[in-house]
Image (cartoon, rainbow, N blue to C red):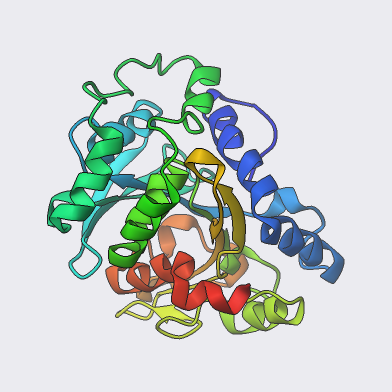
Length: 303
């Protein structure tokens, strides 16, 4: 996590993170409590494991469009993931340097939705006849930073939002929030001894009143046991819809990742491990449950 514009990529990540921090109260609550508890000396010490975005899989939108921004800044496209029940596809992207976060980019397979839901989504997006990223000067840092918060389609009506919500909570989240940063992730394994494992860190989080996503258990663990993840439940925010209608919807959330050493490096002390010596990438089953941090079954607990 950085607040100093050392490089263009730093500036772009700050343009993403700073509005997200203002909108997601748990971000500041957690970082301040970590300093108070002595887990950190300053919040800028937090290592951001990855950030995530949600998109719509439509012509001129989705992963094929959005990824161009980060590929331009040196990210490498890595493994694909598929979520059949949630009708999602995803990829993760490896950063140009180790101190930058990974990126997890997902898209909704709109063509797999019901005719009624597709009609709603296409009603808002049919005017997008060209890839909006193609019209962006990717070397213009301010323009790129502003793009993430630029409305690409009109505010939905509450009726349309609720129709989508019944079929795909992911679709409803994207139709309102668009490219807003979905979450950032604290690298728990990088924290001081006593808090560098998820069991202890989750206990700390709950002690300060943080509500955790329990879908698949509070800790979601990869099949190889080397990637462990938890997340907060998204807070409900008052949203204004078309025609001035108001309704509370799920906002963004915070994730926590613990990446264990690969088997050949398990004897290396935790504070001496390099990034490449730890489990990399993601796990579809973990991510499937993390998505539900914005789903009604979880958010009702945090309201």
